[in-house]
Amino acid sequence: MQIKARETLLKRDENMLVLEVLKAYNGAVAAKYFISALHKALEATKSHVELSTNFFHEGIVTNIDVLQAKDMEANVNAKLIEAKNRYNLAIAYLKFLLQDESIDGVDEFNTLNCSVGKLEELKNMAIKNRTDLEWVKLNEKSSQKMVDMEKSSNYPIIGLNAKYGFNDDKPTLSSDKDYYMVGVGLKYTVFDGGFSKAKIDQAKISHKQATLQRENLESFIKFEVEKNFRDLEAKKEILVEKIKSKELAEEILEKHQLMYKNSIINMTELLLKEADAQKARAEYIEAKYDEMIANANLAISLGYKMKEKR
Image (cartoon, one colour):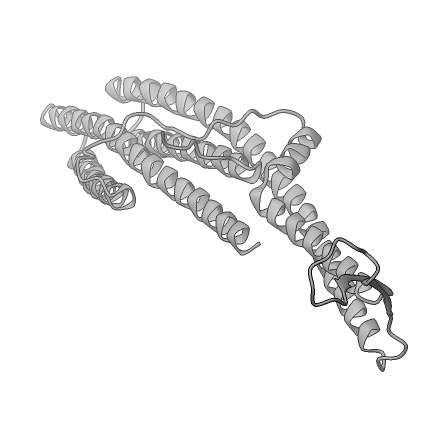
């Protein structure tokens, strides 16, 4: 029982480590994409500075436009520095978790394999696969055996004893002096002051507690699966909308850049759309990260098992 409990705790710790590694890895990927998005934003703001400066020299706009564009450029530069720092920290944390100093970068977003089906099927899968529930079931089974043992100790016990010998100090083939002794004993409890009943009752209480623990854990597992399932479904839908939002924001920005070049709008309006595009890109990256982690949470709640090293 204790060995099984230790194995269950070890498995839980392994899954928590897997989740932490995934968060660190995907956090580094997100930071990498933030850096890429901010480089794109920096190029755009530099072009705004250059264009507004040319317009100012031509007397088309005031110096306010130039200052606003330069202010935006400085803000983007600051965000870029912060994103690079976050990336470096994420890589350092990943090295620490994996105890691997050779890690120098990350590729694409990654998560645990998780076959998403109908909710009730997933709940049943979790009940079947969760190692923590296996241990609780084993504890319940063990407590039932304890009840049976306490009951059996109160039953009458029949004993049989047989003995053979001979009454002669000389070796002989005659069986005249041989003898046999057979004894039968019966042991039972007449009165023990209720001690046996108390032990049985205590064993029954322990079994009932184990049963309640198993039932509560099963209920919690089903709730956890449903929570993570619905969370993943929501994150997927959010990601779809964030992709649309990013594409629309970039299209709107392009149109406003053209409008500024044609002196239809001022720099303030253009920079507002630039900020909207930056925000939409960042929210898309965050939504992608959230989807990866939600997928991993569901996989672990379903009883994800790490592949054993060969």
